[in-house]
Image (cartoon, rainbow, N blue to C red):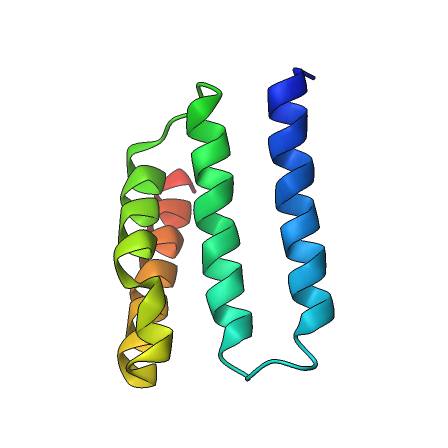
Length: 96
């Protein structure tokens, strides 16, 4: 594994583990925020390493544009999460 890729993967794993640890002390909605943020970070790592998918790129763009709704409007944030899930499920159904 390349040094830079390895570092990015370990940083993401560290982020996810520390997020998991802190969830017992944070507000309930931080969990979904951290999961979509980690998803965006993973897609970014993949893209930097030549693994590109148009839908995943769109998902990452949507995440970056909407992830902070969790702090402003919980219902809008949940609707955003539903939309993301439906997009990925549709892609999985296409793949059969």
